[in-house]
Image (cartoon, rainbow over all chains, first blue to last red; front, side, top):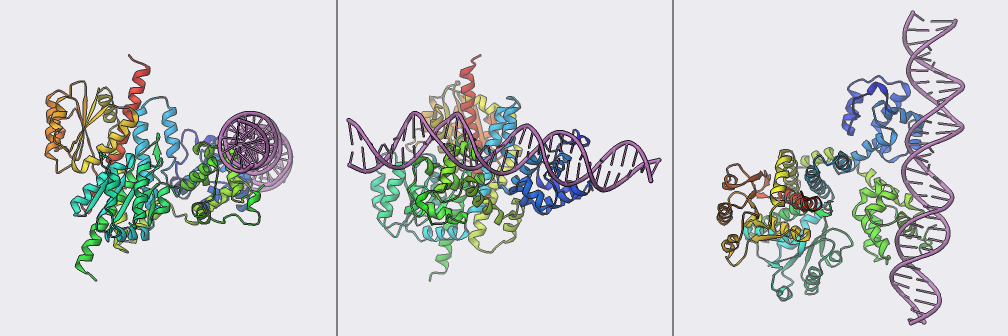
Length: 285
Length: 285
DNA sequence: ATAAATTTGGAATATAAATTCCGAATTGAC
DNA sequence: GTCAATTCGGAATTTATATTCCAAATTTAT
């Protein structure tokens, strides 16, 4: 059980606070505990990935010492202590999952609050993850492919439709010629037939992939139209026929994805295309 | 023991090779194994930190399936497979905060990169700010107002249109009766006339406010229809006629607002409404 | 349509890891 | 230097986790 001297005080909730408590407060630790603590702060990755036994050996202490160290700070045990180090490596916000279950556990005090923070947390982590995952060269190439296009065809159904709706708005404002493949009267396939290799297409589709989107994308691909896709997995059927594709890992909450990260990407793309064209006009080769 | 069909071939030594092998070679995997593989590639962090049981649950498969998957690729077992994912995180450790400052420091390296990080930065800060600013009571009341409505009228034009498009999709999925006030044939005013006080409306409008949105909102207000608004300022003309309104401070970049925060809010609202109704049905007062 | 082969779920088992506990060693007070 | 309190090492125990195995379900081949 947690060290008695720490009664009441909650253990540090993240790596930074833990570190601050150790280096700052000059907590008087006995020899071995200090040794273990020093090792932990110097090798946080080892703590995150190792086992009590392996860490103990690396730090030249006993596994039980690690458990005592954890108790010293008020954690329930080594495993609890270790989660702090794991969270540090995860991009998602610290103990996001835990907070949720905690909210849910603490009776239905405010189930609405859980929803609110759940969706915002999902949006936040999606954006952070995607910013981390996206390769700048891919982004640059996407802008070149779409920027060079005569007309940009926008393909998206269902959940993704709203994204292209927003893109269409931005494109209009920016004077970028485009064509949505999302009519309500079923002439989409005919619309697609007008596309030429000098055009380009941007397809957005997340699992479960809408059959029509795929069909339209395939048709465009067959006509030699360059295709840029935004999808959620390497397994997406879009990936294999795309000139270039972005993997967007939208975190979901309660089974609903928020599209916040995709929204940021599409906006960046649209402005990027406009910028690209402005430059091409000023300095035509 | 490792899958016999893979004899001789060594298992992928790092995450990228593993991904390449799955995506590229079109390895024919049975249903559940493919499902597990897709989850693994899409959620590498979960594999790195989770346990076979927790991952299995998240991917909707059995723990044994994960072991089989590992064998399929030639690994000795799930644990071996998992180390690939742990190594992936070990290699690029800098914590989230560090990485952000790194990105900001790298400043004007490439103009495309600046755009990308500009939009993602705007999205990130909007979401963080809004989550802090929003009052849980307001959120709760909005759910009550909209949850009690017979039909929910959705009002949005131009930039905000895509948000309601997404809302309409979510509402359909959740079985929430709604009516978009955004036709292309100019009968919106007539649509609005059908609204009754037992209905409710959700209006979204940012400066510069679309005249029609305001007109429609006013008409609904005059008919005694409760109105919830999402707008960007206390000076918004919507604020004064709303039962309740949310101020969304979307950070903009290059003059374009990303709507990421609004997206999170609308999604939370829609699921909130569905939950509210579910509870009302179960325990009608 | 039928049989054979493959795949799957889930319980049973084996393995690994964390935690506890207690005697020994060390430290600190007087 | 002696005694009490604290700290420590390491074996024993408990808990968590991975793995195996088999019957049932599904798919594939004939």
